[in-house]
Length: 156
Image 1 (spheres, one colour):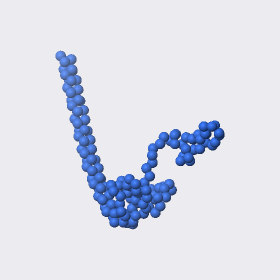
Image 2 (tube, helix red, strand yellow):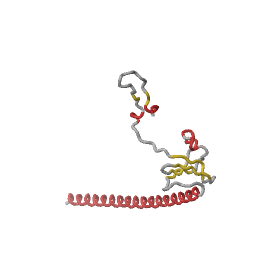
Image 3 (cartoon, one colour):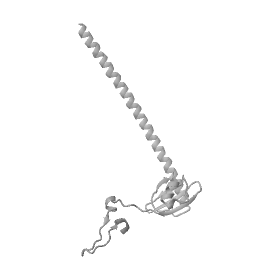
Image 4 (cartoon, one colour):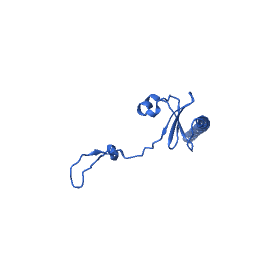
């Protein structure tokens, strides 16, 4: 009999333990669900703010220059010193200025100064295999007259 009582105690303890684990897991899932839902609401509010900012910038810039068709991508300049070193297009721009990037044109606009800093074409980089792109090109004529080997980048 004592053995049966001990088995029933162990079963009761295991049932209670499983119940506690289930309640804790359910609580964690509900908490995670609520947090995710709040994050989604915050993200959608951020999108609304970004759209409002884009609309405001487009309204101001369109009074200064004829804008291309379509909706641009917008970026904020955060490290102008680094950008200017590699790309002279950014000279005169400041941190916090906005770049409107259309399919064929980029426009740097400074909201703090309410001016267009620069406008230039957008060049799409074609993806190429770096090994093929940098491989030397053999320019030896068919008649086997020796000539020099030219770097593919220089040949273009």
